[in-house]
Length: 229
Image 1 (cartoon, rainbow, N blue to C red):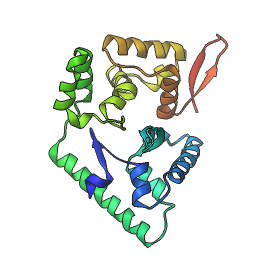
Image 2 (cartoon, rainbow, N blue to C red; image 1 turned 90 degrees about the horizontal axis):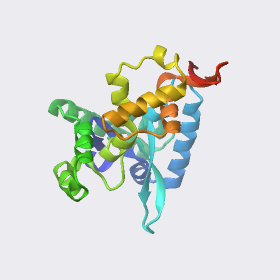
Image 3 (cartoon, rainbow, N blue to C red; image 1 turned 90 degrees about the vertical axis):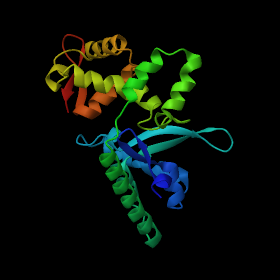
């Protein structure tokens, strides 16, 4: 049952809007609409980050067309499923709770190690024709559609950002003391020096705003700075 409802990527347990739509007998487009509505509500609160609950992705439908979908963790699923009513819906909620609990116990008991950063660096130094070998050796980190926590996702959006925060001692005080452009340039240098893929500027700024509760403001020197919301 766990394998049908959930996916484990690194230490993150997620499910998808597609799986939720199927199990709760909902139209997927209506599930997407509900998630978008929740994201709009979350974005209005300075205490919550949409990145903590839902991550947008895509899938290929039966007509070979790309369609939107979402990956969500336990908190995202809980927010979404609150609005599902009826006896059958309750039964599926309980099954999801049981599945999340079982997966978490499995992760903690097995001491699973996250090797995504290690593999990302390995891929950079590997000839293109040898990449399939790495994918075969570490198949659990790869997927046909980049998932939250998969190597493709984590490399593109999070690995460099997370290690930049942790390894360089980035603080809220430092982030609010220099122009946002200087912060982004520092982040880019770090990613380049350590051979990480980096976020685009808009995504980077938005992520910092979500994580630290920032807004941006132009000051008298003509530069934009992060300020506490």
